[in-house]
Amino acid sequence: MYKVKVFVTLKENVLDPQGHAVKNSLHSLNYSNVSDVRIGKFMELVIDNSDQDIDEAVKEICEKLLANTVIEDYRYEIEEVIS
Amino acid sequence: MYKVKVFVTLKENVLDPQGHAVKNSLHSLNYSNVSDVRIGKFMELVIDNSDQDIDEAVKEICEKLLANTVIEDYRYEIEEVIS
Image 1 (cartoon, each protein chain N blue to C red):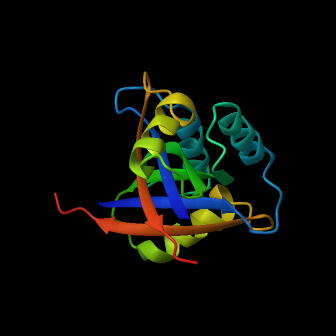
Image 2 (cartoon, rainbow over the protein chains, first blue to last red):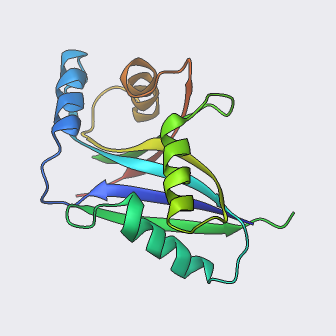
């Protein structure tokens, strides 16, 4: 069994209106020293062992479903759990 | 200047309909060995130096705005950037 953590973030040159809104809210709350906020997704998957290579499987899953590779980058960490 | 990474995840006993939908989609794509998916948020903040202790500031920001502590847990990593 594997525990996989996937981080999906907007590419550097893509506007992040949600992050912008959070930054403005923080300024309203008097945290004026916050100069940038970017918001992404964090996903935890539990994957059972199979014939397919885990690294390859996770890459496919990210490309096909979890990330929109036109505007998003992704990275992942795979941890094997011995039960 | 500090780069702060914040991870917000649903508490263990809170239902995650979005994660459930992603799991079902993965099963439709023939990744039937994916047994659990949980979806959370990943936020990157850039915070300038100030009088307030950075650890205290980040904790306040998470509690007040970034996480709903009734149903979500959060953790953060602070990295100091020397420019």
